Image (cartoon, rainbow, N blue to C red; front, side, top):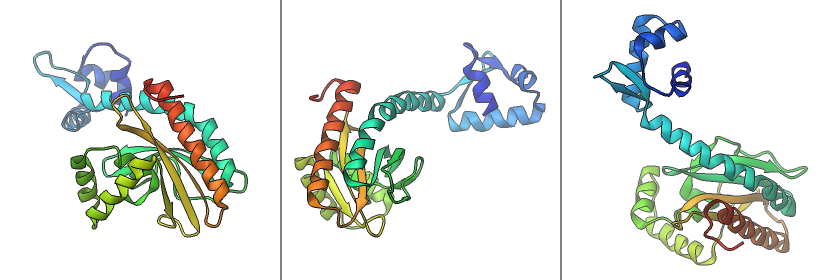
Amino acid sequence: MEILKLLSTIDVPISAARIQGELNLPRSSTYHLLAEMVDAGFVAHLPEHKTYGLGLAAYSMASAYVTQQPLVRMATRDLEQCAALVGGSGHLSRMAGSEILYLQEVRAVGATSLVTEVGVRLQAHKTASGRVMLAHLPDAEVRAAFDTAGGSGFAALKKRLSLVAARGWDQEIEEITRGQASVAAPILDHLDRPAAAVAVTYPVGTPDVKVDAAIRALLEVSDKVAAKMYRNRKK
């Protein structure tokens, strides 16, 4: 991590000797760490100059951070209002392979603590948030995500995703946590691909009128965030 931080503060690739000196590392450890980071794609080696710079994996992470942080900032306040409608929790998540990764969680007063904290990953096809994103991916990507997750019943999932795509939202009831249900809506980018999803989780038995209000609010949030981020959705 110290090597990555050092490389990110210098505009040009630098030698292993300079990295060793700047960070006061043993010579053997420096070369071993750099070799591992090159293999992982976080550092690029320029053998003709005997220097090292940031690799594509590091740039990809930086790009993801730049994208995610505005999403979190834009969605948080509206998610809090959505969660308050059902006395539950609001979530922002994105796809990460065959899983969803939670980027934000907010809770209404008195809401139950859930497993869906920031940084938690869950299988996409088992969650409302995951399914609203899968519903906007090509069949090949859905199949790949489903096969990687080790699930069964792909035909049933495809039928479910067709319904989700048609109505624009999805619901799960006690599929993740006993006594809890969720509804979710996708945030689509300029290519109509899923950039993220917003959702609320609430106690089973919450009046339908409140759940319906939360669904409408989530759809408004998804359109609002997409319009600001990608300029392709109606405000």
